[in-house]
Amino acid sequence: AFGLWLLLATSWLGFLFVSMLIYQLIYSQISGRRRPDYIVVLGAGLANGKVGRILAARVATAARIARHWAGKGQSPILIMSGGQGADEPRPEAAAMAEYARTELAVPNELMLRGAASTTTGENLRRTAEIVAADPRAAVASNNLAWMYASRDEQLDRALELTQAAKAALPDEA
Image (tube, rainbow, N blue to C red; front, side):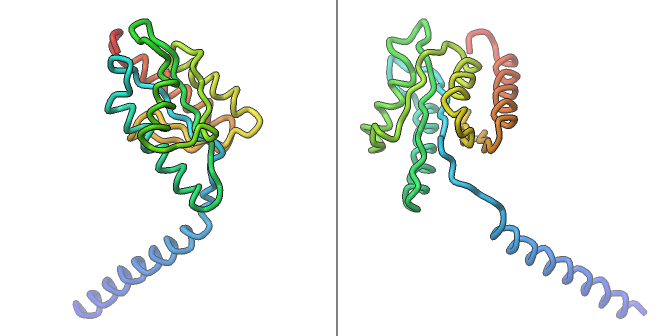
C-alpha cells in the first residue's frame, strides 16, 4: 500500500512539474512583450553638476534596453526627465543626456529632454504629455522599479506610486 501511495505521489509531482514547464514555454512565446516607444529616465539629483552613481545606473539601464531593441531594428526614444533643483547648476535632463551621449554613445536624435519640472510628480506629468499620442513607455524610477506602461492608466499608476514614495522620504531627500 505504501509503495502504491509513493508511486501516485511522485507521479502527481512529476505531472505538476511537466505541466508548469509546458505552461512556461507556451507563456514565454505569447507573453506580449512589446517594444517601448519611449524609455523614461527620472532624475535623481546631480553631484556637483555631474551625474552621480544612482543616476548613471538609471541612464545605463535605459541605454541597455534601448540597445536591445535597436539590435532588433526598433529604437525607442530615451526621455531624460529631470529639472533643475535649487542646489544644481544645470537641469538633470541636460546632465543625463550629456552622460548618455559621451559615456554610453547614445545618439542625440534618440533622446528627448524634459527639464522644465521641479518635482518627480511634475516630471511624470510632463512626460505623460510627451507620450500622450502613444503612451507605451518603460518608466525607470530606479534600478529596482521598472514599470511597463501599455495604457494611460498604468502611467497614472506610476505617478501615484512615485508620489507615495516621495511622500515617505524625509524632507531633505
